[in-house]
Structures are given as structure tokens and as C-alpha cells.
Image (cartoon, rainbow, N blue to C red; front, side):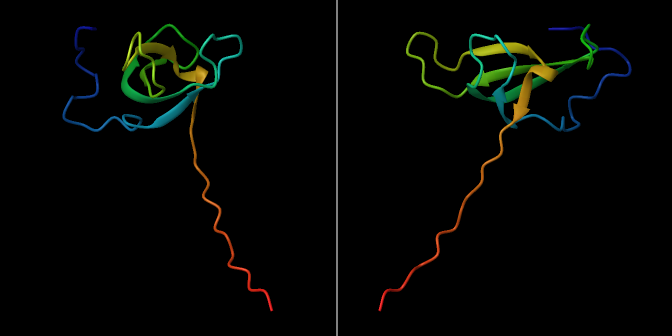
Length: 92
């Protein structure tokens, strides 16, 4: 854990991406396409975005359930679900 700095986001403030459902999207990553949830956001990192995210995978793994990992912010995408409504067809 990083020591707090004077201009860090206070813990009482809401970090916008916490609890956001994501999918790992980095090409060549062994867990690419796996879904997860953002648990923490790490600021001031040496990446192009300056951010890394702590992700908890949501897929079932008997060896390491609730597996967490740190990923570059640019290596994940927000998962969006689309619900298609079905139209009731009537036949005469």
C-alpha cells in the first residue's frame, strides 16, 4: 500500500471506478477476456494513463477463488450488458 500524500483522493470521497465490471482486454495477456470487478484505483503510476487498477476476477477458480491482480488502466474495458427484449408473436 502506498503512503498517503497531501493531494491524494481522501478515502471518504468516492472513487468513480470502484465496483465497475470490466473485462481484461490486453493483447497477449493470459487472462484476456476474463471478467472482473475493480476493487481499488492506484494513482500516480508510471504508465501512460498514470493509473493502475486492482481487479478481482469474477470467474470461478478452485485453486485461487476471489483472485486479485493489479492491471494497467489501459488494459481493461468496461463491461456493458445489452438486454434484448423479445416481441411476443401471435400466430393466426
